[in-house]
Amino acid sequence: MSFFENIILAFQNLRANPLRSMLILIGMAVGIAAVLHVVVLGELTQQRINERLSQLGSNVLSIQPGYSWMHGVRTNAKAVSLKWSESNALAEQSPVIARTVPVYSGNGDAAFLDKNWATQITGTTPDYQEVNNESLIEGRFFSQTELEQRARVCVLGATVYEKLFKDESPIGKTILIKSKPFRVIGLLEAKGENWSNPDDQVFIPLTTAQERIFGVDHLSSILAQMRSAEDYDESLFDIETILRQNHRLQAKADNDFRVLRQDFFLAAIQETNKELAKFIIVIALVSLVVGGIGIANVMLISVTERTREIGIRRAIGAKKHQILFQFLTESIILGLLGGLLGISGGALFNHFYLGENAPLPVLWISYSFFICAGIGVLAGIYPAFRAAHRNVIDALRYE
Image (tube, rainbow, N blue to C red; front, side, top):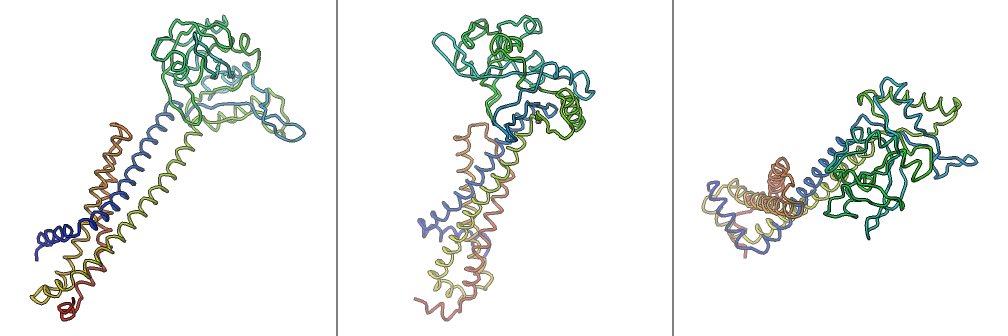
């Protein structure tokens, strides 16, 4: 019997038991579709993380106050340890730090007409836009002159804009920030959420934030832009040396500040996402193994039901290897059909659920065919071997 005759006979036998065949196909298809969906989700998440990493930049350090201590116990309160003058000192004294950006942030309400939104008010300098890779959709960032004049101007993050203005242009409008009027001069492009929401902010000049809004003279953080990412160790040494000297810390005293890489959190999320994706893929592969067991079960039942047919074929001259390949072909076709159904269903589900921009995992589609064929072979070997080695006389007598 030729290979093509085996395929035709296999389809005929599958059609003879449609419900049983469909249940096995659905089991295989669900496993393959689950694998493809997890892979696509992982790729989309990876793309978003890479975009955020490129936006943050790997050459920016965030210097933040340490925690206060009381009677040898650390409290949740932040230490008041960073000054604007120290931000300038870092840029001037360290050869590997290109520039620094002082930042003070606090919570407050932003209001426009009858709309009110609790958000984060961030005071900073004009260099913040370039150092933190902020892109403007409309208007402009505030200038050095406006910083020096403590001007009441502001730039809106995407979330604040959506809550206060929706589709209306905010440029030139006056909003209230902590009950004080500010003129909107810019609108930032959305960055998307990660461990926080960077779009839920209103940016104002640092002088305005410190003197007109919050009444403070210290900073929430300092952004230090290195010459390159390779200067991390030297930059960290310079920051610790300069700040410890300014804070008059003893040699054995701990730092009262923290230095973090801006891309550290996203890199951690990236690794966690990879591990989670691997775990879910393993679960999906388990469902494929279950599907393979189902194929083996179907093939064993098929061998039992067709015992007399096997005996007749052997009696008229069919070889053992021909019987073996006949049943093995049926098993492989079940696996491949299940895989094809799963690939098609997974692709359609990803298209409608994740959108048109969902990537097509070509490599994993190829893997899926090999996996399904392999499962078909493994699941069919024993039933096919059992069919091929049936005793001809016993098979002919089987009722």
